[in-house]
Length: 285
Image (cartoon, rainbow, N blue to C red; front, top):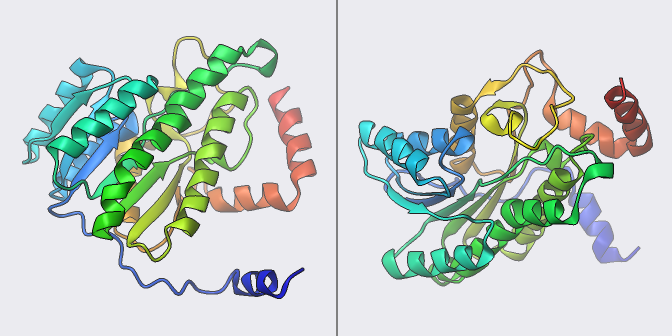
């Protein structure tokens, strides 16, 4: 082991030396994907309540219009773009439009996602590709296209909404896990590369949130029947994280019933074989 790597390991676990205070949401322009329902719809309203101008993106235009009205009701007009982010060319075109129409985009919240609860033996490559396009490649596309302007200003925030499924594997969700693990790893490496540039990165890891992701056509029922947290509470947690100075946020930190989300992820890494064996047995009940 090199001396340099030993120094990195010695620093691990010590208090961060970063002194940024997080983003002041008031008066900012924030791009938010997956905004037509669930966490995204709730976050659109929460950010508007905190006096941000939100640019809300999703493929369902009628649902976006309903969310836009909710934003107006709390005092500010959003901007709407109805785009299917599973189409990477369309995602790139959206980024071009945004760059042309807005002098500044202060923050990108990559929240758009689809579930994929299909046992591995029935999973098709087309399903894997679609899941990766929506859940990982479209956030990558938007970030890479809009990042240069942030770097030029030496200011900005990238918020990637992954999942507990980006830290721990879940039976019947291999494609979803792959996409969310990818987004988590992407976020961590981006945090390293952008250190000192003025552009911050945050990784959000939602747990059981009460949204329509649990009941989607073409998906098997979830193996867990667990009490869920409201989308509004999750959105409040994300907005608080945006204003905080950390990187990784488990929302909620404690599952209903008191289970510690981060401790669950840490336990998996500490004893991966035992965790996988136990989870496999549980899922086969």
